[in-house]
Length: 254
Image (cartoon, rainbow, N blue to C red; front, side):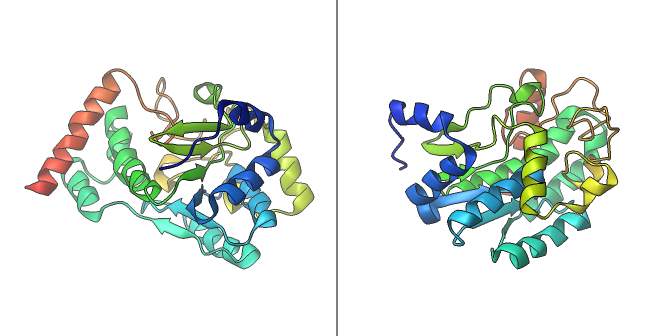
């Protein structure tokens, strides 16, 4: 069980600069701290900062089975630059097989609940299993990425586990400035016009004036641009998702 910081310490950590918060977390949790990354700009900034504190980092990424080839190449780039062996986390093959059998391989294009189901089985459930290994984890959320992230705190808690967002108060410009100043490796798809990078079928390049996450699930007009890892869907979609997930799990148990 994680010993949570006192309220006064949480207030101080909320005001701490990103490198200071990361150093505190690495010293506090050691091997029980996980750094989650999809090798986007924010995640690479965090990895670069953390590696300056300690080379003995536990870095993991969710391998959904539908990632672009450029993302897999970033795993090797990180290993060569920082000496970090990235832990890959995969979905349950039986669950994915059952989902595809019921709904097809590209179910996510048909409706939001089916897209949420795919994200849930390929991302959320594998993440939940992986997080059992850690007392705290680090993510690259920023408040100005979109409306659903506007209230992100630098230090949060769920299920007795701390979730740290050191870049919560950073802007995209600050991220880019850090990358340029420190020669941080960049995901190749940024050069192709991407601003946010996820699974290959669900991500596209965006226009310069479009929102950062406009290229994620771009066919969805009114849905939140979230996969369920950081924010839970609400309303009808959530209830439908529960039904869809239960169908898959019941079929697996049969």
